[in-house]
Length: 435
Image 1 (tube, rainbow, N blue to C red):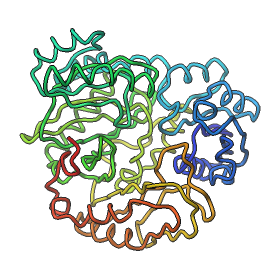
Image 2 (cartoon, rainbow, N blue to C red; image 1 turned 90 degrees about the vertical axis):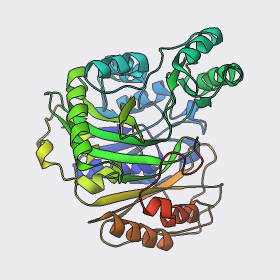
Image 3 (cartoon, rainbow, N blue to C red; image 1 turned 135 degrees about the vertical axis):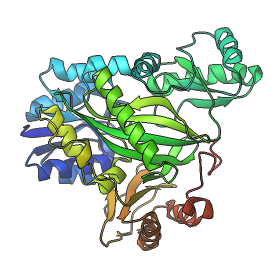
């Protein structure tokens, strides 16, 4: 097991990883930008190194500075969290060149699986149903030809996309003509790669993802599914597990399929296979995330499996010590993402309590919300023996949560969990106008 890990991230996920390391007896190194000098994760870690200015390109995306910090502090491994460098094959390779373990897939796997066309071919061969689509389309003319072959409407997506960015719904040649250059530029800006591809638009649909853990010895377990259909502009707001739309029979079938597919493609680490679930009850594979998901904690609450600790163990070569039959999928867990709606100074913070109530956050009283990074302030998560009880618990927790001084979306989340469409479980991706 590693004796020291550097966390190449910030905010609530850096805090989450540091806490897991402390519980495992592992020393931690935080890295921070000049804007995050007083941040909670900096205070919580055993050591902290400033790696650059406030812009992410100067700090949290600065590969050489992060590697230097790891070498200087004697860190044996780097945990990238999510976002930033978490799915960057070049950075993973740089870690290996410097004798540092990257806690995630190896560079070769990341390169291979990052190509969505290759990945879809692999999982199709492994027996997963794949959404009809294309490989990367180099020109607008080719895109128009292929879109007409697939049939409108289609989704125009960035090949290196993630986090809901670089996605457009296209209904005609005219819309595609306007959107193609815009989407190319957006993809270059966001991901450094302007390549785009087309995919058949499945409508109406729910966004269902299945969490897996796979070790180096070839063992794979699936920790059930998450329903991530509550989205605005392709950004997730609320997740729950299990999905109220998925039957026990369907769940068992999908668990068999994704574990078999993960074994066949040789995946190692924590990963998530994402699907669209249509009105006829069919699953369609979209993509695979090769990292820790923001919403991992809702699965942890349901299963009592610490995904972050298992990421670290797997990276250290330790095999899984449980099998699929031992995974608990009873009860119900929900997560509300608490986002800032502007900048401000936190005057008062009151975190809700009670049995099976969890608030993963980077907030500390007196801090100022930075304009440089993501607006996520924390994740409010509850678990109960039934979905009805989990709903009541989440309402109570949202009502108790106080974040004074920084505008937030707490009231919006309260309206969602009180909406009849959500309480009934009868919702899809159009709930918040996410078309």
